[in-house]
Image (cartoon, rainbow, N blue to C red; front, side, top):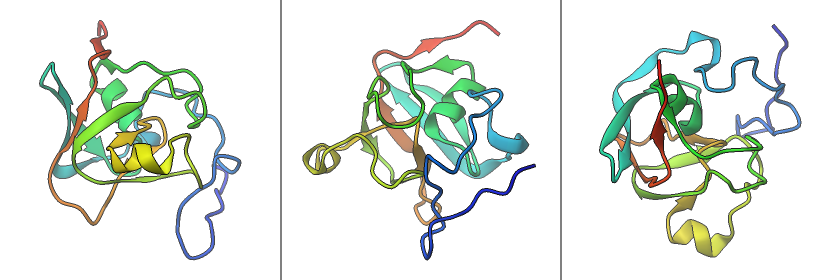
Length: 134
């Protein structure tokens, strides 16, 4: 497996350093879910376990939930959702959301990772989410 360099002093990968996933909706390297943490989608009230190291888009996909998406690198904004609860960090330097949008709770699940220092579920308002056949 190829080593992925990290940004100095942050531990955050940049989009230029991350190879495209072979199966983009799967949790990376079979990552185990973080104990007791879930992704919750509203208004459907669907839940998905949050794997360590995976994006929110990957967590939803691994649970058979499809969120609107296209680029998977934080530029197209097709996946934009409002976060009603929880905290995330980003795997790229500056995702395609403005400072004002961030203050209002808008995030990009394709590049948003659960903040390891925060407890509890991440709750997203994702009216465009659909269940995928398994």
